[in-house]
Image (cartoon, rainbow, N blue to C red):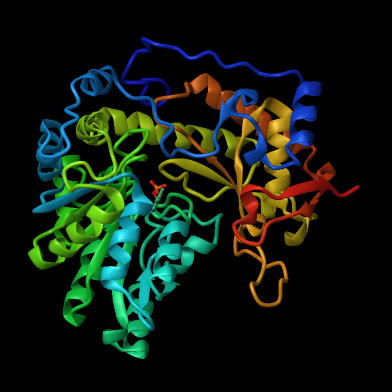
Length: 460
Ligand SMILES: *Cc1c(COP(=O)(O)O)cnc(C)c1O
């Protein structure tokens, strides 16, 4: 143990060189990239905190499993290994592998929703919201109000606001609500966890109305760890039992395996016991993802997922995993850098709105900070704020985001504590000259999802 942190419960047996470019090179690269970090080549990045999705390091056992993958079209051994792991971890009856989380959403949303229907979630992840809308539905977020105050420290800032949920169901009529979704952890609120009590209460409310209750399970293991750590009555319950209890409350779940299952590609749909619902899932899987026993993946990917699911719920791993953002958070607090507190499970969301109050939302403070981090130390983070939000589709006015976050997402088992120190040092340096940072204006942008490809220039 070092100062309360759980050191890496693994040693490194294969390395991938990374290098930091000189300051002149970094300036040239970010300029060529139109001041958009998505346009950078990954090789020109020293520490890549763009996302924790599909960027984890697989274990020796997972790589060994890859070699044992059964590539049979139908009924492969790797499929049955995955089914066994899923039953053990989640305790549901039916599972369908798919190629990633959004593929699960694409299959499930048309079953649950249709024109005029609504989906209510603690917060919809952006692809989830997109699939709700593509299915003809409308997505409404219903997170507890404390999520919106980044400086307030609360144990479960990802929770559903149950009072508002009940009001929304009553106002719209229960027939109109096609699904209620609980995203664990609540990614868009800063990787903030949801309590077991909140999951149980939401499930009870949905049962009362006869509305399907779904979990968006991308970070189910990190959420279980926070329940064990923070929720009264769960300190002595194992992660395995917490996970099974969580999923016992849901009718179905969708999952991106690129997060807590620690694979580079993969996803999953789970159905607790409704055989008719699972028949519909299978029927939509075959034309879009492929036969049910491979679901858009190679046999080796199924094998890696089966092993990763178990590794992702290991208590020592989760202590180390959640310790990295917590450590970064504590270093940032010392340096006076504001962020969504407490630290999330997979990332630190720096509150660029508060760090750079002189840069208005339409000059993109969170994007300005992300660019500065690259210029300072070759670190890649991204804007989760007005730059990402975009324009009103009708008026073309720039929308103002509730948050101006610069997200530092930490890949699993990839970077060491020294790398985290580099990140903290860079932010502390930038913090000292925060008032000198300038905003950006867009010089070119596409119509939709502009933040991936837009080009910008600094405002002098
Ligand atoms: C990543 C993610 C998704 C989408 O999964 P992909 O594998 O990227 O398609 C959905 N919901 C949440 C909460 C996520 O974090």
